[in-house]
Image (cartoon, rainbow, N blue to C red):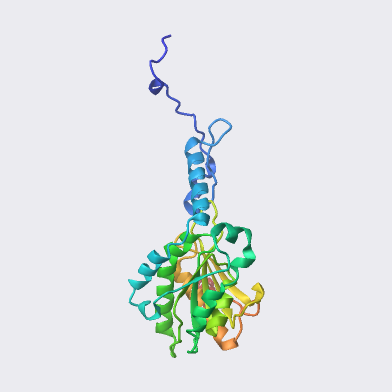
Length: 283
């Protein structure tokens, strides 16, 4: 038997064994049903894994482009009233120190605090803070669209317009840095948007933290969190719906945290239960 002249003539139609769970991949980004080639992953899946790993690393280390972010916000007529964007910095001087010293990322540096105190001649009801956190991609990809929708809904639903402070962006910031911003501006509430720790299927997941009367030293149990805000996770509309419910309840009760429960879906669940009960009666 003659040997093939090149490797192109060697065919291996059954080299990759498909996994019966592969059909479920249309419902999730989780790595399931990958199949196998011999005792290993197929080359295509290994390459996808390496790409996702590289994207997660980049999300942590790529600096937030504040100039580009500011341009995004300036293009929105809804957000123009809350500009120019206040550019702030935590006590972490660079990315390496930020990653090694979480405590420094939780506090603003003295220059930023003084800049904010110069603005607190007015009484603000709410301040939006954007922090790069552990994924600059999250803020650069989602912050503008989310804040724009959030404020639009507030303007539609609130009988009394809230006094919103200029939007603040904090470089090398962690969740608690929003407390310093809120305290320096003497604002009643802070909504902090931050890049969450990237996963291998979500390098740009954004988190939201709502705090009433925030000040330095507050415990995390005094905040409300909404996680995984992105088109492939919790979509903007759903996240804004939950956020505004919590915001309004926070204003009514003058608190946030473990004592403030998210009941934004209660009316929907009651409606569905009523409909199901009616259908049961008809049968």
